[in-house]
Length: 245
Length: 227
Image (tube, rainbow over all chains, first blue to last red; front, top):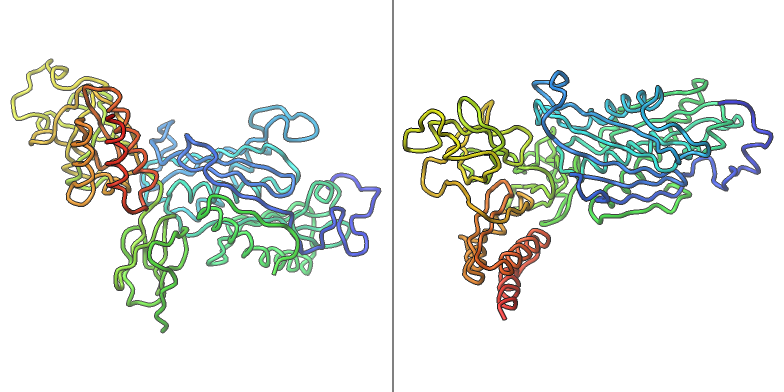
């Protein structure tokens, strides 16, 4: 949302990367990429790439963080120094702490935490390449990794962002649209109940635009759910990108 | 009200997937009833027997049950007894009075089990704490040997129907094998090559647990290694 682009974001109804407003980037999901973790997944969404690993349930350290009647879901979201065009300083910062927190609550809603009392489920997410939509990609990868780890869950969690760039509401923003656009709306949903577990809005949307954005996100959910389901069963799955039926 | 089964036998399912609709279907294993549906809570394999829909987890840790026989490692000596790791988030306790039929004198605990020892024990209680016992017969301290880890849900396959698979392995290799229900396997033998062969065979069973004709495959594998 910083600055304005000299180029228009939409040319003849098409975006800078040739997609239409309701189209997603090509996606790829693979599970079991980290051999030592109980569950793991590698997810890519266009040029955004993430790896998620799940460890646990295990004993809680430090002890004061323990919750006696349910499991603690501890997420560590981390961007690697080479994931962006400018090197970023490794280690936690204000942004990564916030994303870890919202991811933890987005995933906690789907896990039967009461089945693992006084334990912790650690989820480590590494962003190897950032090209907008890292938190949504991270949630998709973490959800698949949790299921792969054999943790009891109510449902999978699917996540995608929509937003507004150049006055047009569009699905799954990529880097230039995110940087020079007007609004970004990442959403995470449990597709079976359509329960929303994460929603954030950066920028401004009118009531009508918000409804339109949510409609685009809801339409994308079956694709994301299918991708996760197929990847868990076959080990790997991909989505070509483009139109959603 | 509609009665419908959405899955086939031996199909892989993901958490949250609706397996069957209607109250006449009964959830079992890691399946639960959600409203009028039967849904899976973990990623796993479905087995349908009549109206019972069961989900067996593919991955995931061991959840202890009473009367299970497990292999554990002594991690700590405490006032009350030993603390044992059994591949599960919370450690298990082996109280002094359940360790042996003879009286354990003060200061002689290390004569029985010390840190790092592996034991074969039975679970007597899974309340707030998991409690073990090594008092009765098959339960004992495991001597020198190899420990490998397998998926706990594949343990029945390693043992086989009425112990057929484990018997095949023992007879063909001459090794001593103990399988804990928590997925730890202990192998002891005179010949290291045979121990490694058994290890390989068990890892293969763990990998291809869903395939049929494993017993023959294992037998062939162990016999082939003899020559």
